[in-house]
Image (cartoon, rainbow, N blue to C red; front, top):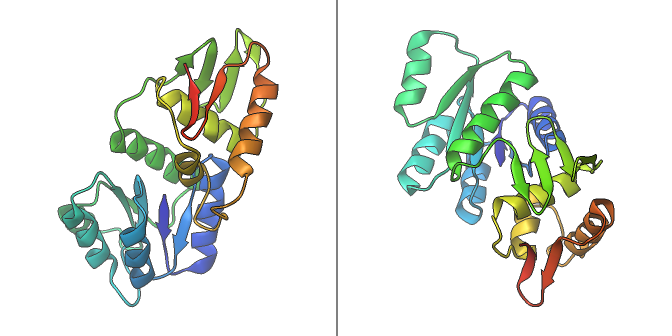
Length: 216
């Protein structure tokens, strides 16, 4: 996910809030930096301030739409007039939020857009005796509550969403961490090791040599 907001305090607050919701979040403080990141990374959702310096938020939104991907745009603005919201949606934004806003509402809208940006998945993910409820941030295995850290939860969610397919360490790194993570880190391996220990026996996360991880 990418947060694009020139008010640095607000941008950082939004990013921190969404990271607590187990999202991997990058931040850009102007439109030009946003376009650079969009040229390198594919984001499920972009939280985009409309009134950006350097490159206007409208132009960033047009670039996202013109790229033709599945990225969803939540546009932010201080303008409350209906015509402003209509204009933003006409540009191709998927949702609109007027400042000031509650962070809990922003995260609810982001969750909704994330569901639209990927193939539909059931509210509760289930596989191999594991139940993961994204809304409640709760994991159970065979009716036993399993407390997980934010990153452990995010990794497990990606493995469950794969529906039995192998997920590479690189994909897990991209989806559960942000752009500042060292690509050569062993954090994925360590997180999977902790997950296995917390989920208990029999082990359900398999390591596929040279490919990644899988929950059959």
